[in-house]
Image 1: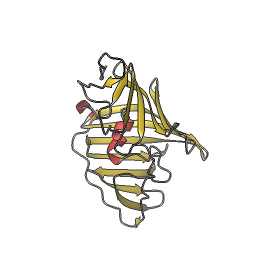
Image 2: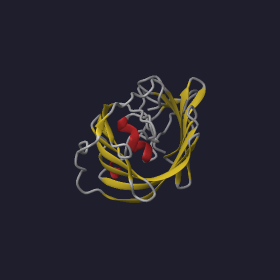
Image 3: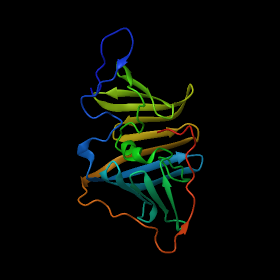
Image 4: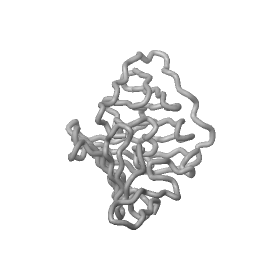
Length: 226
């Protein structure tokens, strides 16, 4: 287990001799990965391919294309600053920290946690030492949101972000598939990694293409997970 609790009457602080489950393992850095993604919700169902170019936790790109290879959107992140390109509408926006972009699955979460989400880690960081009881881990992040996670042999089997006593976001691993459910929006996103290989050089920093119009990135709601 990544976390080993101490014996006692109540939950003990989590110890993590290996990489904490809310961080990206060093072995995953310098890689590029291809995912198959499906979505379902009130707007119907869809599918696309998504690639993650992960140079470091602070430098990465995410690119989405439709089933026939047409670009849908691109996310370019350096530190906490990001550029979002909407190729369908030839629009872009620049943002920092959290993001909430219409039509983009896997949002809203902090920019720095998106690779962790795709890599089946916990996309939130505890503000104080987490607590563990058996395979269950619980913590609150810096925004006061409550997270719980279930571990299975050192891996994350599931996690939940709570809105009071109600689950807001739920993630679970089912075989090769990762499944994220947004209970408030009635949306479910499923993804499966189909390819992983060394990245080589870090991706070049992107700029808005000629002809793209500037737009505004909406800040994520205060209760958003991450």
